[in-house]
Image (tube, rainbow over all chains, first blue to last red; front, side):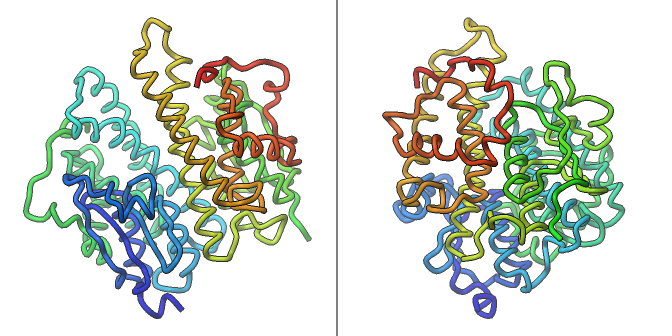
Length: 229
Length: 229
């Protein structure tokens, strides 16, 4: 059984600082599958378009993930596959109880919209250097409104994590995105104290510490999202 | 005794592909007794108090199962498949290679939506012709054509009628509505994409899809934004 090999038949191509890659890595750790073959690529050297990756993923993107003969790309697909296939291994990330299951699934699938507002429509544009500050103002306001929603979710859940006391798939999918935004200068406190506390708590979780983007350690992030909150 | 969905409530809008997905899954799982409330986008029905109480984002689909609220189309579809696994056909196969393929295709659909809707259709719908960057539109259309070629390849690879071969799965419930919107907007699949054209015809005739076909599509013509692709 694959979980008995702790992930040894698995291979992940990933890049440091990529939230989608981080999601998969967090799930692998939580499920006790941390012994996978880890292939770190360089975005700067355009290694996502290498022959090795293109053969497995014609989109030339990471995360690209292989288990034996099976290839499964797209971070959400990989995370859901791992949780479903290794349900009884490690932490159960999607509850079986219907109301909790519904809440975890909903928060999980609200995360892509959060990523679009904060990274695809905002943070990444700064990275590409293609920035019109007037347009950015509206997008920053939109991100602030989105953050307020998540602040409310945390407050209502009343625990350490997005859906309460248990760390779930919702946190695996949401936290890496939040962390990238913080790296790009997002200051959660004082405007969003629940999110601030959440960020600190999850940062200390072993699976998250283990998979923290290596190039972030000991270096400064950007200040692009400084004035959002 | 099988659940027929009579404790369920779905707020939906005609032509919304996320709503269409949920409606297809409800039909496939034998949950057709779900109460369905049609809202009008032009009357801002999705921002009604009734919906905002259940979904602070003021969006459809907004979905209730008894007391459980579950918004976001992917969340609702996955919740229904998991909770009613024993009803109707299995929309996510349990065999690992099939499961991986279905999950991956499901989560590639947002890339199609980005290239088609965000980068092309939304611009046509919200901007005046003279406000459009024609060079950018040409590039976006070329990118969409490349994306469709990928999906054509996926159908060839799967070797059957559907995205995973011979069986209709969640991948089709997620992908087909998006494809149908593109066809509605003038996209001609044949002769360039013969497998996609055959796919479109076959899936259009599936009972769950016929039953949930956007009502206003039957009475009116779409705008031919993609006719020159």
